[in-house]
Amino acid sequence: MGTWDKSIECPRCASSMEAGFIVDETYGRKLVPKWIAGEPRMTWWMGLRLPRSEQIEVATYRCRRCGYLESYA
Image (cartoon, rainbow, N blue to C red; front, side, top):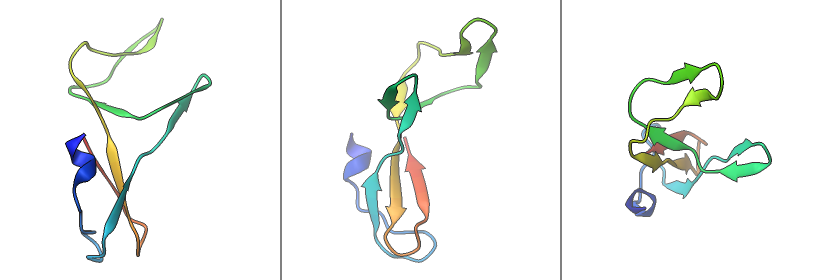
């Protein structure tokens, strides 16, 4: 998870940002959201169809001063 290790400056106020993540709570589970290339495709049976391509966890940074959130895959 190299993205999580970087020191990032807030693009809005130039303050330091801290690493964190957004929780995806579903059916009693807590997961880290993932980025998947391409357009979302819905199915009537399973809802969202997930391709077997690479899925990348999303890292989110929050500005310590203004609270701005920025996410990276």
